[in-house]
Image (cartoon, rainbow, N blue to C red; front, side, top):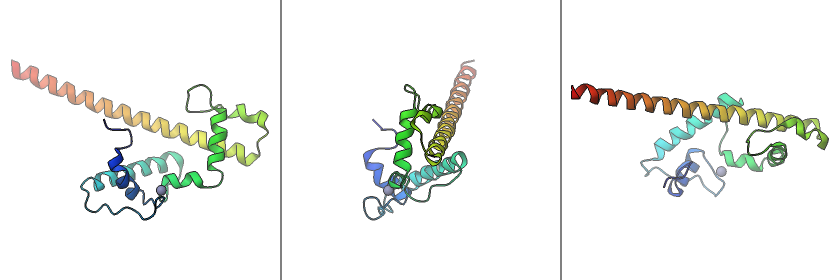
Length: 147
Ligand SMILES: [Zn+2]
């Protein structure tokens, strides 16, 4: 079964596509036929991040987790989440007396997350719509052939 985000065998290809050096050198994937496909997929993800979040990631997105403030912001955002919803009620953090910078960071992260989730939902809806139209066209074609 294919895991969301790729198979373990594809991990070096994704790392190469993101120019990831977290585990040393950027993997050399010249010999892999899927490398170009995955590089294009990573590029589309970078485009969505840029469009929805306002900045294109430069290099490995996993590296950003060790950037000062990022983990703390995600932790605060997790405390503001309600139930299983991935988005937060940021105002619920007000009793914690956050600094302005902490509050703005959590609010920014929440807005970016909402935009990214909406973009993914729209993308998935377009794919379902295209698949449904293709299936309808196929079934109409088979109906016509039966006549
Ligand atoms: Zn990395």
